Image (tube, rainbow, N blue to C red; front, side, top):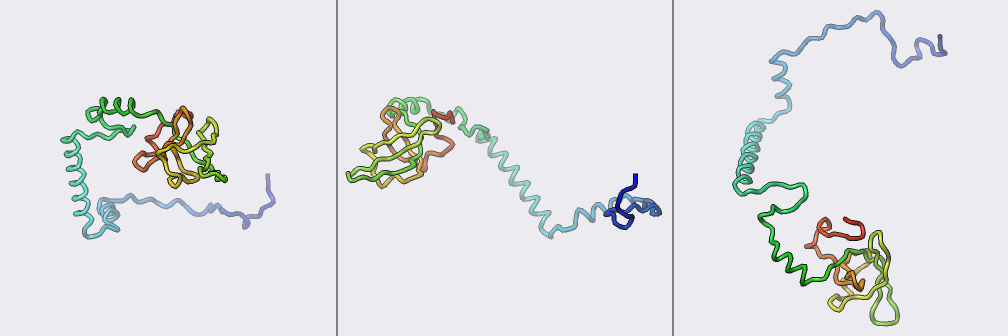
Length: 170
């Protein structure tokens, strides 16, 4: 079926006269030339040093017993279960929330609106141990589950990935 485009209007033209050219395979010298192209004078020495460093690092890790984990947990030999149980008994369980707004009224103590992820929003006071200057809007805070009272802001020592949020299960 003929179309409306002429022979000179096509993007790709078929050359019926042109025969396929013979493809010449690369020999060993050509392959070596391609491998050496763009290589600096110190690249072989640097590659050798990098391999040596990786080998030594592997030996050190084998001797110390360090093994990388997908979970980010320390090996069970380094766990301190009695200290963890003692900490759980002494401290009250906290939940992570986000301070969304600070309400300042005529009274001295401001109120804070917190958002517990996928659960609810609460208007709360500060605990006695926290200064009002420590809390800012948008900050992640630790909240007492019983009173929903701000106990502290999440410190830099507590990594975001280590905090467990009961409401979302993360």
